Amino acid sequence: MQLINGFHLRNLRGDIFGGLTAAVVALPLALAFGVASGAGAIAGLYGAIFVGFFAALFGGTPAQVSGPTGPMTVVMAMIVTKYAGDPAMAFTIVMMGGAFQILFGVLRLGQYVRLVPYPVISGFMTGIGVIIIILEIGPLLGHADPAGGVLGAVRAIPGFVLSPGRDATIAGILSLAIVLFTPKRIAAIVPSPLIALIVGTLAVYFFLPGAPVIGDIPTGLPKPIVPSFSLEALPDMVKSGVILALLGSIDSLLTSLIADNVSRTRHRSNRELIGQGIGNMVAGFFGGIPGAGATMRTVINIHAGGRTPISGALHALVLFSLLLGLAPLAGYIPHAVLAGILLKVGYDIIDWRYVRRLPRAPRAGVVMMLTVLALTVFVDLIMAVGVGVVMAALLFVKRMADIQQGGMALIGAGRTERLPAEEARLLEESGGAVMLFRFTGPISFGAAASLAPAMGVADCHYLVLDFTDVPMIDTSGTMGLEDAIEAAHAQGVKVFIAGASAQVAKILEALGIRDDSALPPTKSRLDALRLACGEAAAQRGKATD
Image 1 (tube, helix red, strand yellow):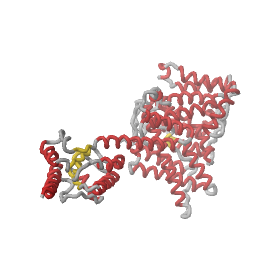
Image 2 (cartoon, helix red, strand yellow; image 1 turned 60 degrees about the horizontal axis):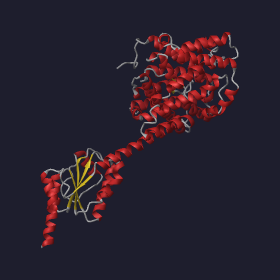
Image 3 (cartoon, helix red, strand yellow; image 1 turned 120 degrees about the horizontal axis):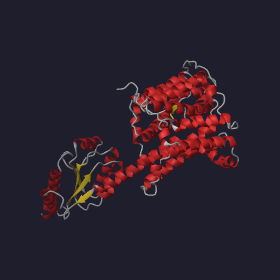
Image 4 (cartoon, one colour; image 1 turned 90 degrees about the vertical axis):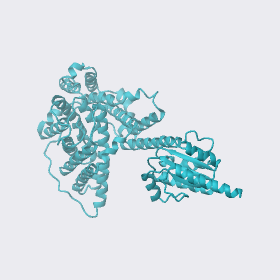
């Protein structure tokens, strides 16, 4: 197993361009997230450096770029506010969150995120693209980001359009034009975002001085923080650490799925959690805010050519070099130029392949995708995915229940054409006193509610339940079976269970499900029919006497 997942030198040029471009985009975001967290701009930069570097080296998504993200920053802001009197405790929680992420990876919990359905991923990706476009319209036109998040930006767009900053707008449109129209043969040598960054910055420096630039960036080396906690605060600290770990894990693995989609690769979920955990532990130790896989920076990295952990690690090292003294150069980068680059990135993130198919796609998937899209843009990223997964799970259960119900068949005299000759003869000779109820496929909680009504239509005295073609039954299905048997008993029907596999029989016996025969539930269908038909014949004989 490779020490660094996905490491090779065959894509070195693309990784260098990807890392450099991602670093330039990450710089203002890291500073902004640091300020928003309440820990300070420098803490945001530390978070981007340490999470970005160690997650790249030890993670499981080769092209992923990690650093502070919006959801993580919101949680960190609450933590910083709560422990304002002892900042060391706040950063100790960051370390705890990293430790929990490592534990999640060791327990192999990351694999379950792969089960997220495509419409959910499509809605999430498209929502991220829409958010980027909305948020970057203001900077493109020379305005600062308005308060109120996405909704605030939407409300402010008319004002931005009516009063654009001339120099910034020219620089932003120039940048956007470069990333849109750079010929592919040139972009194959130098990524168009890097060309736009250099050309746009030089244009502003020499000809468009009115465009806002990043400005001064704080510098300095981080100092280690000694972990701090108290027995009284420990339960709440652990709770906050678990929240950070869960949010960071979901955020990172969703970005990993997006990275897979864009780069046509496949990440390793559990290893990614371990890498993110190591990065967050180190970030907390040096006073950095927590981070996760960053969708915007990851996609920028991939579009600029990054494909291996070299790009993510280089992005962190570039930020570290800025921290050590190159900050004045990055300070000349205009916000409008970055906005032009990001508008193209936002457009590319939108899942146009699925969007174009919406009129023809299955309605359930379309509703799921649009719901996740709306929640991503206007509510919350994690809630959007959570709601999407729940919708997908309910839809899957409904479809499975329909399939399972379709596999149930009630067979009696006059309808025995698909049975072996001996079984058909027994049912015909019973004269309708014995009926066979066949199950096909697994019996899960989705079909449990339909068992009693389906079996209740049997007009007979003996009912054989055939489990020959049932590979598994869950607890809900078993309890539904018990309700159906009790309903049959209430109608005076005697029930026999036949053909159950050892696994199914074990579950039935464990939950106390019994039929009315002395034979085990693993008896064959033919044996059960012989027993039932024999009893039916004996009953007829008694009635005749």
